[in-house]
Image (cartoon, rainbow, N blue to C red; front, side):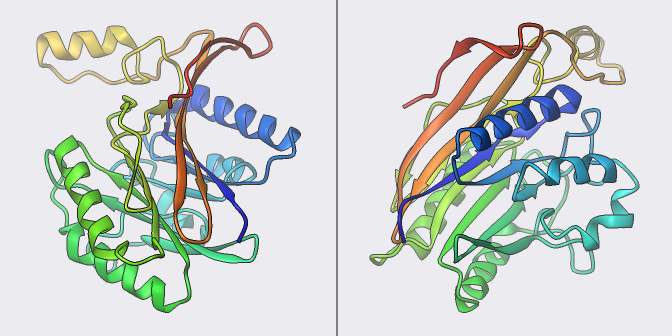
Length: 282
């Protein structure tokens, strides 16, 4: 297998996030790049959840959509999630929960799989991901999957680091690294710790796609009032002229991930997407 490129995009937040992602992916297609695109979409519809309309719209630009604890916030999710083949929800919800926690895809003739899991530290009560994800990895391997990518949607950095190291040591012990990517999501703040662990590309948090002019994608004024007063306040998605794209670009070969590079740039939406800041990490 030749070197292949995987793009993982952090939490898409609201209309600004959707527009930024579509523009970015279209630019890759225009350059003739063949990539497998994974994006977290749990905040894609006005900051909370994913409507069927937005799912169908984003399906033209992504190969797999992951999610998290907010995936249930738009009630029409229950009407379509069982038929949404490239949308997955956290695998460690109880048995019988609608949707699937993983999916196998064909990428240039190879079987690749994506698993979504939810952390438990400072998060809603949920089944433990440790054994569930390990058993799913074994099942996918038996199905002939050669590359697995994991979106771990979690609050605590320590939980993300520990879970990633456990999986890399447990399943990437021979010449072939089965897990080629482990990407943290949920906090919306991109970390600068991208690295390769036992042939697995890793970052604690991929960041978010949306407006950088608010507070992790939401309006500053409502966030400020809620934090100062401690009273409930309806969050609104941040607006503005700037669009932010956060994520990682990963190169893999037949045996392992060979490179991970941060995607982190801002474009001015009023200047035909003129780039005003660029940091692709290292």
